[in-house]
Length: 333
Ligand SMILES: O=CC(=O)O
Image (cartoon, rainbow, N blue to C red; front, side):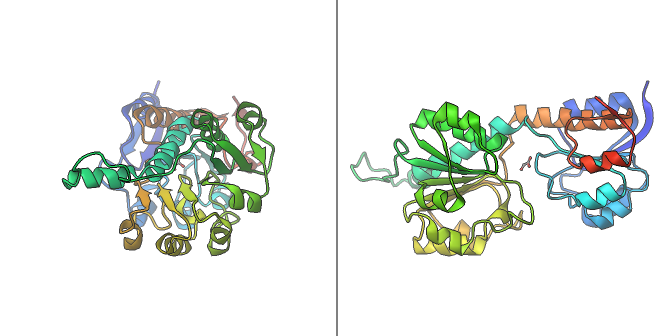
C-alpha cells in the first residue's frame, strides 16, 4: 500500500528511482523543468514535504532547511554532500543520505580519461584534425607524455582514490598516496606507498585529487603547493572545484609552472573562467564524473531506497549525519 507521504524530487532522475518512489508514496513531486530549482523555489517547495531527493547543485542551506516543516530525510543524489548544511539538518532532526559506492568506477574511469586526454593532447589533436590541419604523419606532431614508469600521486585514497590507483597497474605506473589511514588494498595490489603531502607533491608526475570538500580541504592546492610540484607534472581534479585555488592554478598553467591539468569540477560551477577555456594544456569536462547510465541509474535507486527506508522507520546504511540518530528513534537495517 502506498504511504500518504509527499516527496520532492528537485530534478528529473532516471526512471528506476522515480518508480520506487511512486510505488511507495502517494505524492511524488518532480521538477520537470529543464533546469535546477532556484533557491527561492526550493524554500517554497520544501514546505509540507516528508522527504526531498536533491542534487549536488541544490544549495540546501539553513534557510532552506528552516522551511522544512515535515521533512525527515534529505537524500542527496551524489556521494559528496558539501551542498548541504549538515549541522543544521542534524539540529532539525533530519537524516541526510548520499550515494557512495555506485559511482566509484564511473568516476575512476573519467579520472583516467582526463589523465590520458591531457597527457596525450587528445582534445588539441581532435581540434587540429577537424580544422583540416592533418597533412600526414609527422615525427614530431603533437608529442605527449608517456605514462609507463611515471608516478601517480593520489590525494585521498578512499573508494574513488583506490579505484583510480588500481587502474594504474595497467599503465605500469608507480603509485604514491596521501591519506589519513593506510590503504592496504593499494599497497598490496599496486605496491603503492603512503607518503606525506609534501613528498607526494614533489615526486608525482600526475597528481589526482579524491578528497571530499570540507573546511580543511578548501584550497588544499594553492600557490605554495603548486610550487612544490614538478614543472612537468599534471594536476587532475574530479572531486570538488574548491579543493584547488583556481586562480593559482590558472597562473601556473599560463606560466608553464606545471605541464597541464584535467578538470571535471570548478570553484563556482557552472561558471568556468575564460582563462581556463583559452588554455590548450587543460582538458575540461562539465562535472560528469558519475555520468554513465549505469552509475546514474544505481544512484537513483539508492537515493530513492534511502527515502523508503527512513519513511518506514528504518535507518539506511548511507547516513552521513549519524549524530542525528541520537535524537530520533529508528530501526537499524
Ligand atoms: O560529484 C559527484 C558526486 O559527489 O556524486
